[in-house]
Amino acid sequence: MTTPAVEIRSVHKLYGALHVLRDVDLVVRPGEVVCLIGPSGSGKSTLLRCINNLEKIQAGSILVDGGLVGYRWSGADLQEATPRQARRARRNIGMVFQQFNLFSHFTVLQNLIEAPVRVLGVPRREALERAEELLAKVGLSDKHASYPAQLSGGQQQRVAIARALCMNPKLMLFDEPTSALDPELVGEVLDVLRDLAEDDMTMVIVTHEMGFARQVADTIVFMDQGRIVERGPADQVLDAPREDRTRRFLERVG
Image (cartoon, rainbow, N blue to C red; front, side, top):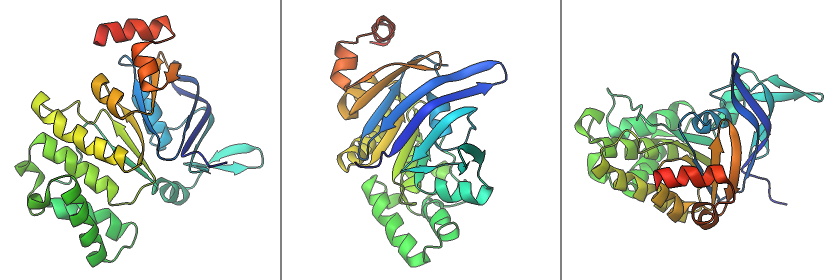
């Protein structure tokens, strides 16, 4: 059998007494696009951050491409990995946040090549060629010498996507990538995500854009109060949800 791109088993996440993720199970196949939907505070973004080991879990396990991220086995028990082990495991994961998090003192091109050269040891010329290819892919070939402050929000987010792709990840995570954008700029970012889906990039996307989720998702996962309430093909979940809680949510956002 093909190794899952992501395998989440019985995961619990707590902030003190606040139980944010409750016994979450989820498998993402290579090349699959999974959209996480649900009300604010349901645990969607936290789950994304746990996959990338930006948040520690209190129980369960998360594997990416068959390997643990941020943890290692000690016999039958899980222990935290060393920082070096965690960084190595995270190299296969790209993440794009609500805010763009670009280096303001770097040009667009410098933003893209910094991590491949410094972290992966990619030769500068090779990194530049890859960066130029990705800027063309996101429609920003003419902006390579611009600084982030000279770009619109939509352009900055497209640069952030290209920067993540420069690390050649096997998995891309998107945490509401259009939520900080003006409405007229949302489409240009969603177009890039559609192109990635057509290229069979494995993606887990937290989104409130139901129309976009319908178009690109292989699987939609509805979360509420830290649990996965319902999952299934986009048409089934959005048009004929099995759970009353899913139906009530979609009625409000529809």
